[in-house]
Amino acid sequence: MCDKCGCGHDHDHDHVHEEMEMETLTLTLDDDTEMECGILGVFAVDGIEGKEYIALLPLEDETVLLYEYKENEDGIELLNIESDDDFEKVSNTFYDLFEDEEE
Image (cartoon, rainbow, N blue to C red):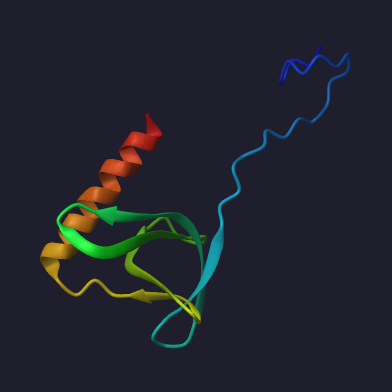
């Protein structure tokens, strides 16, 4: 039996544990540079009606980016969260959701 994974094979082998593949999108920044980001999730926020938000994780960084998320006929549109109060609500909701997934 494989000691690494208990897969039942009689031989030892390099066993790669499958991880959930994260969907990605390419974010074009204000200076026209592009950043590949993993999509952590799209979510609604209590107290902010009619809007959805997206959490992105740049593949080259560990800083989570939060944007307002809209779908339209051209695809998706990401908007900056202008209000400090809304940003705080979105941040708190994201951290609450992320902590729930970690447990």
